[in-house]
Image (cartoon, rainbow, N blue to C red; front, top):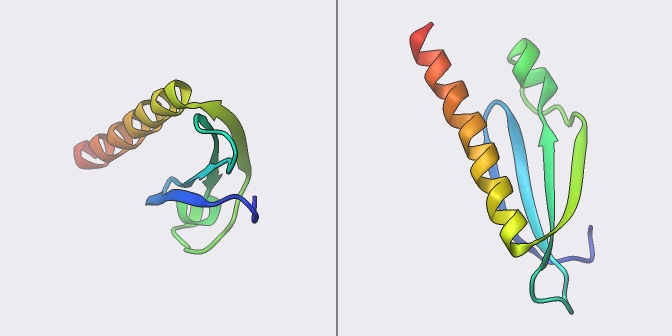
Length: 83
């Protein structure tokens, strides 16, 4: 991962951190990396690198993943407001 350029990184606190990397010689191939922040989720303690998942995807799959994880985040925020 270190040699791939990061094109986007973001934090959807307290659930996960997302990074998107582009392969230098491939126009439509990306690595989508999601990392859970377990301490923050379970104990409200920051800065824990939890399990990580990296997927190699094309552009359309990347867009679908972004919609999927955004929906998870929105549902989480909505559930916090109703508690």
